[in-house]
Amino acid sequence: MSVFDNRVQAGKKLADRLLRLKGEDVVVLGIPRGGVVVANEVAKALGAPLDVVMAKKIGAPGEPEYALGAVGEEGEVVMNSEEAEYIGATGGYLEDQVRERRAEMKEKLANLRGEASPPRLKGKVVVIVDDGIATGSTVKAAAISVQKKQPKAVVVAVPVAPRDAVEKLTEAGLEVVCVETPMSFFAIGEHYKDFGQVEDYEVKRILSENLDARRTG
Image: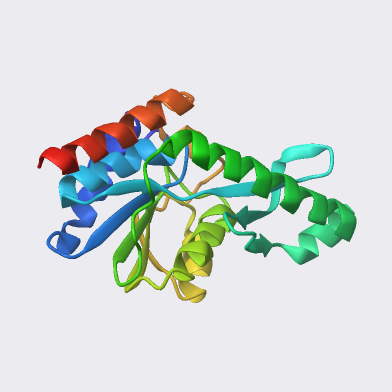
């Protein structure tokens, strides 16, 4: 079932699909944490700056891993309203989740970026990268956040995703580049031989190395 050895290999394969953007004014944004490892390979291949864009899953009451939607950095909410209603997630519960996720993201961004300023996105081709898509809620929330900053174009790029999720994102007006869209899809991790957890220090190291390379390049 595994398609990729690890996130680095997946990033290299994804970068091959994006080489048409080389020479454009591109900024690559990885969704922490695993998405940043993939995004690093894309940024290196395109000679582009790398930064992060945050989006957090909103889990169901009592089942936090069951996604009802997601919230972007500035509070943009993507929600499966029918699913939330069916499960019994009240308006108050969802409001609390959005508030908590926003606070978490603000703290996380400050930790990951340190003193570095985020890159300017206005007029740029912005490539949003994750290590895979399950429902599409997280990457859609991230894209909505990015679109508010007036980029020239937004491209969502991932190694693997279910076909229906790619179709929904495309129908929502997003350009999606995906290496593999397997017929059978249960979880992102099943398509990697090594899908170990990526820690914050690794994300910070990658961002720092990219920034250093641009300063000396």
